Image (tube, rainbow, N blue to C red; front, top):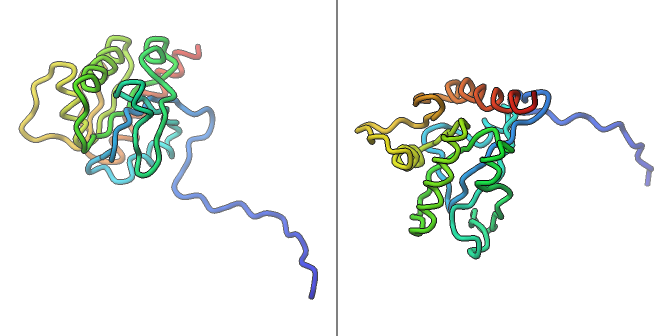
Length: 178
């Protein structure tokens, strides 16, 4: 038997491009079976663009976290992080399962607090309609695949639109750091 030499580790090939420098921390409204709609690989896209997602649960604290497949995801952020601008914004995927009445109320509070604090809210798929309802907008007949709420409403139809809109999240973080 021959002894193998330890070869220097090769860097693993990277998929796509990654933002260099500090990561942007945004809150992710967790829900069972999250749905990012028609924007393919939205979670990966956010990661590629340097956004770290901190889970925010809308259900009561005693619920033990939000189920995500066979894993429970515990919250690492909340309304206090929005108010203190510890987050650069909020990301809202759609939830395929309905929330409790208390969960719906908490959702409204989180979205409205983010808007009042001037933080961007990016919603995807079924989360678009619920986000618009939370801030009191009329619901359009044709729901867009994604949107950005920040100083108005911006429709996001493609992955490139999402990439462009993430500049708002990075801008909030840069202002906070200054």
